[in-house]
Image (cartoon, rainbow, N blue to C red):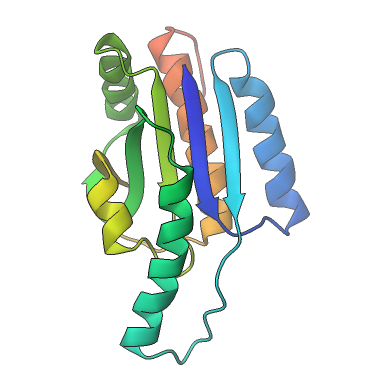
Length: 159
């Protein structure tokens, strides 16, 4: 399986980089994982709604330009569907059975995903109603993808 993770923002924190590297190493046994890091737009705290939408649109255009053709697109969004780890594993397995061997996960910047990106998503996934830093979300997503492969292969993994 080919997995692409398109994300806004660079990882600066060493502890997050170490965690990401660890899960990329573990995942290499199961899938080809490609992380596409895109520069975030400057977004000061006091932006107007219009300016916030412009930032999301600029970041969204960068994301849309990186989505691979024929890829099943899963956007991470608070308003998406919440799944347990087992349900995510089953969903990914079903995609594979249906011939979807390429999946693109999309993580927006600090303001979230633009409407255009959300419209381009085949599925919207929510990890929580809580807001997480997009850098940390990348690590959490990689861990859940790894857990998915372990579950689908009947291999043990801590609960």
